[in-house]
Length: 94
Image 1 (cartoon, one colour):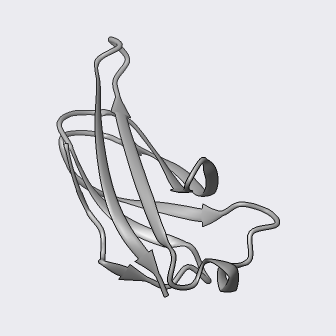
Image 2 (tube, rainbow, N blue to C red):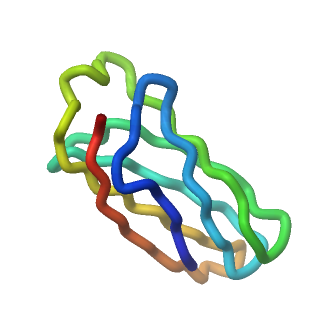
Image 3 (tube, rainbow, N blue to C red):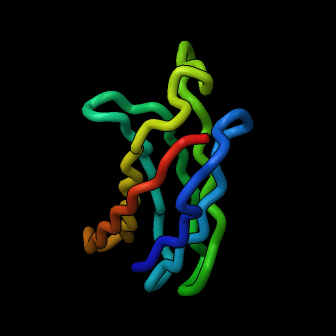
């Protein structure tokens, strides 16, 4: 599984991430600042290939407070048989 994410991202309207899924299954993503989940989202892959995963900010999180901070994105793909794959990436909030 592969994840493409910009080095710097504006989080006002959430974050769109390109994910390459190995086969059909469910893709979930969490954007963290330390242990705090800042944004999350999920999508379903109908087949192997690329899909867009939109992460939306959690309630109570102000994008302005994250400006310039380093964030970690963790994306997990899993299928109905229980197989899973994980990818992580770092980015900086604008």
